[in-house]
Length: 227
Image 1 (cartoon, rainbow, N blue to C red):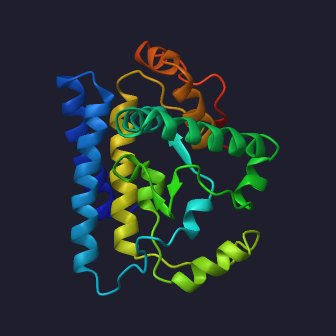
Image 2: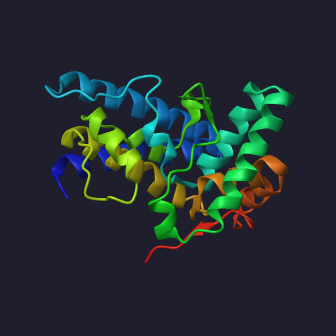
């Protein structure tokens, strides 16, 4: 573990911990953490001689398996609630339901090697971009052709899409710093499959209520068990 990683993770842990102490609203703390993250990564990319080839409309990576913490799923739900019309939400639920049906037939390993178009894609752009999970934020590529090759051959794990090392270190460190702070609140810190958990979150407010009581937030969403 590098000094850069340790310093970045500790700084985010301290900031997020302070915000959790001052407010029990996990959404507010996560929004502020996302803002700090975006600023941190923007500076790191600007200072790097190598640049990501990611751009709006390039969505090869938006077919990958995505995992998220309960607070990330609940913030995504809140964004959908305030930014989507009733018709848009209904269409989203249909796409999530279809994706979830596929995901439930796959083992975690099979899911990793299977392209499933994210239900949140709209014209090849993320419809909840400001509220997307850390896992989505952390991904970037320095080789768009490799991304396309990986998309065309999802079972070939040897294809390297390339990442900027310094940016990747900062992204992971910031993420882990916030997650460590969130864990101190005593709320659900499990990892879930994003699709199945979001589908459950959109059904009613029970996941939020369970989360606020320190219980397991999602009963239907697939829990990712670390090996």
